[in-house]
Image (spheres, rainbow, N blue to C red):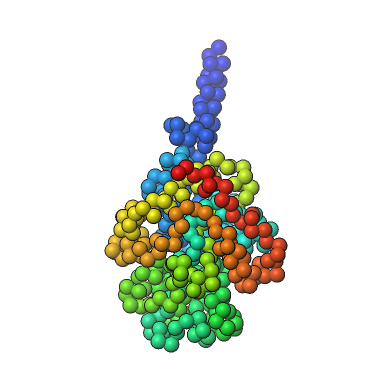
Length: 343
């Protein structure tokens, strides 16, 4: 009898443990479901909504335990997703199009920005002679990494100005201090980066903004249309099998996007981890101010923007060239989850 009671007790504990891992039980005192999300540079302002949601307690409020990880570039982050090591990536939407050309179904479930949030920065010493993409000829241009969104956008800007890939050299410059060092020591003449890196270069006088794609007007002037960028994208099969968790992620992120629209840059910066300011809170707040307008506030994809991304990639992505008519854009994003976020 004692043995039977012991076995029953063990089974009861085991069943209680199983109930604790169910996302349906989250928020009722049970252990929340864990979701790993890779961010393509967690301290970049373009991906701020992910960390801000964590800081505001948004994921926990939805009954989720979200683990935010980081890689220096979106190209690296997507590889971790494909390997199955994470359930989602906060990165540029264009990766979903590029990966579909390789037979992978990846979809954006929350579209946080309609513009890249990138700036083309020129070294101060080169600013007099490098005043636009037409002056890229013979120059060394920094991109995050080969095959990254900054690589494709740089190629597009150069081609639009009448240049070919043989007219300039792209250099892997990374972001943050590696990018700053490359511009400072002459490793690159100009390059594409984001805040807070851009704010640091401008504030120190080391760089000047050549093209500003942090706003709709600047993006349309540079690219001829919107270019949806920062998003949460996930494997299509995982989304289908975990709709409850995806909905909770959408709820949390969209609520943060709405919160951003109702608060100042200083208030937003104050909510972020202290180390993101790198010892200069005022400069970090300025970086947030310069980029915060890129976030759309609703998480919705603009169909015209998605088509513009496909147009760009069909010209410059080795994977998408020649496959434009084979890409099903409807599978690269969904608005089903953000449409259900409570008002």
